[in-house]
Image (cartoon, helix red, strand yellow):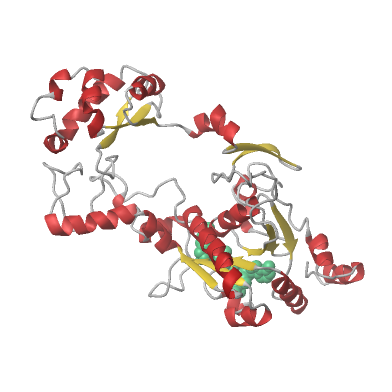
Length: 415
Ligand code: COA
């Protein structure tokens, strides 16, 4: 069985995290991803946050699996000629340069279309058209401008960014879907099209429920599942809700045995209405099953602090895994706070290929996150990231360059 995207050629002009996330996914699905990098230096992340001197960083290796690397000075005349040939040969060009960089290089959308009308040009920028369209943007800027930071954290603290890279990797995921969709439409239209994702938009899409809450707040003045209800104050904008569940089923993080010394001895506990009776029995509060102050979800809303304090009294006597085992017997939704150390060693994640061990010629073995999307007919084999320019000669030969052409490009420092 071949791979889902076999035969699709991607000209990968991405760097840092957002764009590489997208092209790595496409490579995992079988596309031939040709990463074009600046001769000499390459993607800046090759040398960022290095843990071994002189060796490609984990930042780079973990975002560029299954790709081929070609070095090319795309600002030189000879480099532009090579690029033209690659554009004619490939199906998709993906880039996340600063706004205008591709145009400045001489490869506007119009020019690319003229060279290859079937080419899909996919871009990530920080912002869409508007006041900030020319700004350079990194992850946390997008989290702040997309509504995530203002709604993350505790009510009495500052806005918080989150560890999940929703601005970079999140937007990369959005872009990958746009590319595959455009490839699908090309089958009938015969034409390429532009695919654009702004990081602000990607983050906002992931914060959709908070825009829902903004409108509920404007209509009703309060939101009963928020920790500010009933004793705190609501202002004009959606407040930070701490660890309260965003949905209609109240949840919170509670301490487990060992929390005094282990920063991750916690459990997320959801007081799902259908299992309220079971919850009361497990935590030793049988009277709450029929007590009108606790028996219904509506009655519990103003008493959530008290409810979770009682839950915590019980969870604090169990490790997070013991609590999970007991609660799952009654279908009570809950989840342990897993540290990265625990995730790295979790056997089930290794078994499914969600955490993989990869071998690298200069770094040796390292762990990476494999493809979280599993296709039954197109399984993913994670292959190490390329060394800088590892495939330059191979790729130039594929587009018709002879050995002496390649030598001349080398001596002119184009590759
Ligand atoms: N040969 C020659 N020049 C090359 C090249 C190559 N192979 N590849 C890139 N360059 C040039 C670009 O043309 C650009 O030149 P110009 O500024 O003269 O037009 C230059 O390298 C730098 O590119 P730029 O994208 O501006 O890099 P940066 O390091 O200054 O900025 C970002 C990095 C991420 C802030 C910026 O690219 C950006 O805002 N990207 C869009 C949003 C995004 O994806 N952010 C998240 C990143 S995880």
